Length: 429
Image 1 (spheres, rainbow, N blue to C red):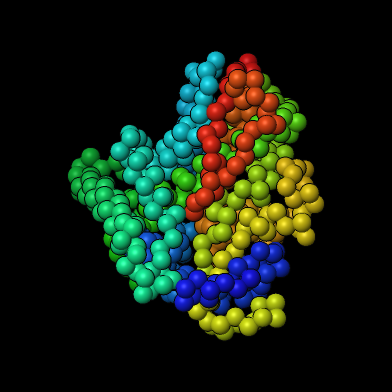
Image 2 (cartoon, rainbow, N blue to C red):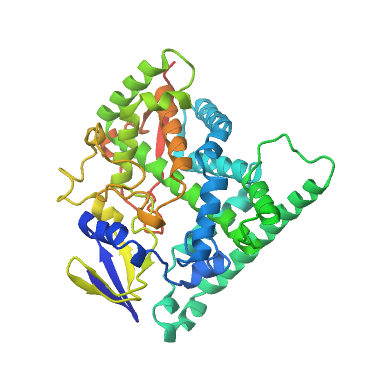
């Protein structure tokens, strides 16, 4: 479908065939990003990985992130952080037994704690930080008119969206400046924690100081990468977890099947460990099925064509913005039998993996601009869901039947639940 959003022609792809042509066959022609007002403000002129245009700078940045921050070895090194934080969350749920619990804040706190410990080696807690992160994500939900109607850019100033984005950017910048200054001072001192596991800030500062590849990591780019870790790592993982728990609660048969598999693998142990995850295929199927129905970013991040190209017989001009409708593709009856039904079994023994090699399932995108954090977020989701289902019986409060759970979605850059997920939790043993 071709739309005209102001002066920007916009191609919307809502089928696996179209997505494959854009993200594989013609990936190079479609792997850049449009220049958007609010992301430019929030991410230091779009100097991070998510919104920066395709080119040598982006390629160098991606290489840095994949080799230094998100390699298999690095991700595995944060195993203790994941297990510690999930154990603490399980303890919190256990202390809430007998009461009605809102899972949203608990899951949000968990994902935030994991990201902050990995990025900064400490938790970032408190209402001020939570409010700032919420405002940051809310700013990304705003449709900035000036990016599409340049002659109406004054409207963004009139509505306050630009002013709010600049205010949030300044507050986050002050926070990041304090973090960097604190870390640099610690590195200079005799009490440098050389024996501790390096966090993201340590790694990026070392690259900035010692890199010999010729790529200069400026401080603005360093800050943009840290911001992306918080914005993407916290919000998308928390959203995915909320929908997975919602689907399991709404579908008790599937929840019980997963619990039986978990109980068999656990063999009486107190917790499910990361080593157990590869032995639990139904768990992975549950999460993939939830992500099919509820991709955290339903329209992915827009792309823009850098050259004239032909897609499915149609001529697409250079400068056309491209939106991949991952939500629609995941529910397309041409690709999925009974597409609106929650059926994890469809992913058992199938070819679909997290890397986006099958284009009817695009929870993490695909191609050059696919999500680089797959290896980081997948074990968090799997380990958390496994232990909640293994440790607790979860039902809706006040006698509400599980199948009557309201699954209405809320508008936004990420696709959250419209209503809180209130549950009653009781221990299984």
